Length: 216
Image 1 (cartoon, rainbow, N blue to C red):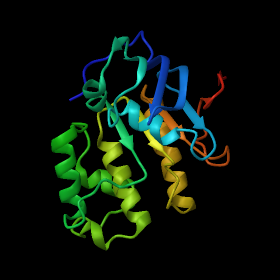
Image 2: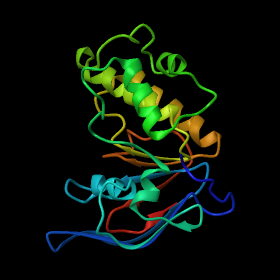
Image 3: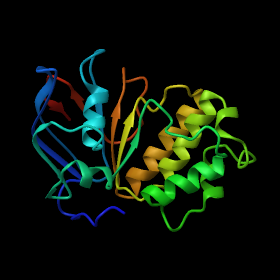
Image 4: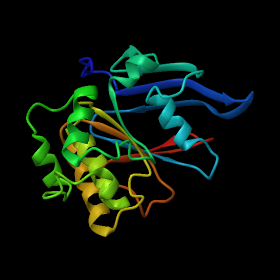
């Protein structure tokens, strides 16, 4: 379960973060932060390191140089993995489990909000009636919505969203925007990778272009 974070410190504070692959620099050094109630949009061309940055922050990669703090506390990969909610390009679902079984398994592994049931989360993302459907029978958009249900169940205050609009129709895009808006209104924060401003939540945002400074 995520640790209690200081309300006074930024949800995420990164200083001098660099990452190399095969002795070649991918990005950095980067300095940025995410406050409660805001989203940081991460932009950059193909190969700029957007996905690598989010996977690094999520604790799925190691080998970074620099300081990563959550709620004012220095956090290594294991601490980050338990305190952040990550939505990647892959849905992270078990194909032969039903939608409900997937949510139950992931909540047991990563924790969940105590005030929200699995059925309610499925209804919120438009999957009411699919509780007993195996994940492998769902469309790409439905699997994305199931991953969004897991995100909404997460107790983590900071969301890492890698191209969250991929495989979604317009109602799905609006769903992501509503979820991000509600999460920020509750004092959470988000990092969102995006290829353009047309796909960005209508909330308080700042912009991080890899290789440049953060802009208000």
